[in-house]
Length: 255
Image (tube, rainbow, N blue to C red):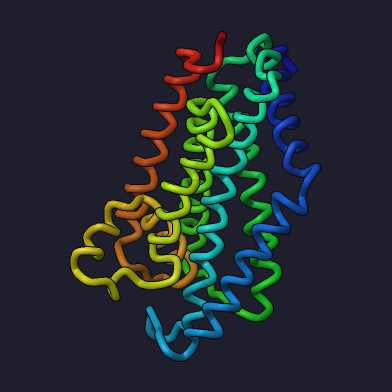
């Protein structure tokens, strides 16, 4: 293994070990929260509303909750890691290592994807015995999962770099990530919205991530899966280019 590759693998292992050392907080807690949402909304609305013909509300809800959990945890993983390194002062050791911006980027994003896979698999393993889901388009499902997890991991990395303290990351989470994920069609079909909010929802990139992910299960969606893939792919590319530019410049990283 070359020195450059060894540095990338070491950073990736460090990031994976960081969240696996506290699995109760990073995996178990998000799964429990999402299952509680499923129980509450399924109990309240099952039989009263249906988004797609032949699909129960609980079945419709589960993929949305999985993707919402993926979105929130991918962002949290990279943002918390970066801001912790900055606040605790150990970022200097990474800056001294022979790592390129692309290696930084890859290690943080891949570690976040590992966490999101663990969260999603655990949640589906807990719920599928009670809420069976078909899989109509597995490749579309996987593509949207990776694009959503990767995009939010990149956004989290940007937030962690730009922020100077934990409060600033929390502001980004509370005023952007959480509202956008809740207002992306997790709990409802956007066709049930009034015309104004229906149009607004189509400017929310999280909507396309969740809608495309649902298509992978049911073969039905509010918009074409090609449109969802286009939006999700463009969002990932724009966020990645921005993040790599910031890493290359060393903005708020170097003294």
